[in-house]
Image (cartoon, rainbow, N blue to C red; front, side, top):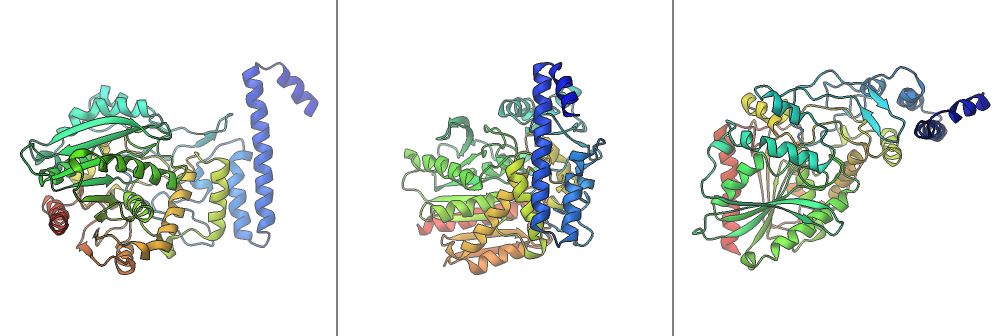
Length: 461
């Protein structure tokens, strides 16, 4: 049989022959990995069942939905779901709501990348030409930049209080800066009017399914109008910065990129001698805490909005599943194997504001990549072990009804942090996006709470 296969492959074009060889090698490697896992846990029938289902797509001719193969239930916030294990509600940061078609089948191409047959649905009320631009693949930064340029004017006309009631006269600047790893990082800053005295600087860390160019543009304008220089950047692989879309190969490396960039901002002549604060939202809260833990004397205050700083014990994946994910992250780190979950209904309370989230066209809203999931879990574990080392003046704000990041985790952070100056504010009935998806009055209440806290720390410094 092998001789026949070799003879047949000999007459194939060189590229096809190479793909065939790679495909055979892949099957051998995956078979070896499967055998290794089953030998490691021989007495766990449920785990054996899980592994058999996991590798089924590689051995059957008919591709099926990976979500169903792994036992996912798309309607739930679950990591993995098996017969003998209750659904695991592992909550990740806000992914903007976008109307989705039924889960597309996942196919393994002849190369080493996982190909997902997916087509983005059109955005309601948007011209066909813009929808065509928005539907293109966004893995590369140039593609995301083209899409953002096409939607900029439309975004500024949206019916949202952050845009409609944005203070006039705010000076903005956008640019790209090459970091020490050779990546082009998108940066933006907001300055108050020239005759307004600058009290301090605020650096922003965005969430997993967000950028610094959509809702935060309105938030930054309100903070800048109160006398602050506001700086923000898109992480590598997110927004307009260079890198594979939604891919975090190393959370510590991402944190180092943030520290490098914000240290440059601190060195600007017009900001010397002024207090510097760092503001993090959702996954950006984890980034902010890691930045503070690495450079505790770099900031005069830390502001966290619905931070992702600990995964509750009852929603962590079981140890066998975690080991599978870890091994998969080393074999196919960029593969989008985790289920796609639309968290819009859980993140934004008001329906009309929820509908606007789809206009954040360059945000990452696809399945989470395997390596990214592992890095997020690892980062929260590290933060949990060092939470007592959080010593900077601290303001934590959280919606009491948040179902994406648990407000009890913010309570845990507030109680364990060693900061002598710390404040926790819980907003009744508030969802995850308390700065974007709440009623107008609540949004401005949260903004004013942040500005008031900043003002009081500037006067004390």
